[in-house]
Amino acid sequence: NAGVTQTPKFQVLKTGQSMTLQCAQDMNHEYMSWYRQDPGMGLRLIHYSVGAGITDQGEVPNGYNVSRSTTEDFPLRLLSAAPSQTSVYFCASGVGGATTEAFFGQGTRLTVV
Amino acid sequence: AQSVSQHNHHVILSEAASLELGCNYSYGGTVNLFWYVQYPGQHLQLLLKYFSGDPLVKGIKGFEAEFIKSKFSFNLRKPSVQWSDTAEYFCAVSNNDMRFGAGTRLTVKP
Image (cartoon, rainbow over all chains, first blue to last red; front, side, top):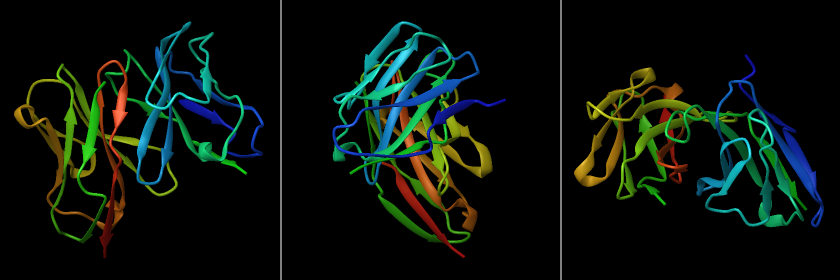
């Protein structure tokens, strides 16, 4: 059982480049979300989705786009990478919405130079 | 939206000492409460959760937490820590989405 799979695990981008972080889950969870983790700031919610075709902004959505065309996938797009987006990104999913346990992927460590 | 405060940034204990990590949240409605643990280099894993009922909840590895509604608190406790408990601990609150505190780094000295 794969759970939540994130790719890539590591990525280095130049300022201004765009890229997509992939997240897929095989648990048929309705709820999926993206967080960034920075030292001393915990996990901050970027975007979340309560089902296919539905997305909403979290605490720090600027500079990121998401879409949810299927239940399984929830990609996060950086439109024009900035050094401030250097972080570790975690994707999470949950059954029954955000109110139940979140299952996390292994994370993507992104460096923007 | 809800917010979460964790009082301790870094806690250092010796093995067998007792642990209590503070967590307070701000939200006027009904929330679900969680504690997650992140071991070095790993992703977050659930320690315990509270939805309703008995405000004292028990989780894995001997951890427990008490929900005190009047204080908007959900503190994590363990009677006797081990070196293997060295990790970062996050309190989380969910309603429409899930928000996390800044985390508490726990170092247990052997």
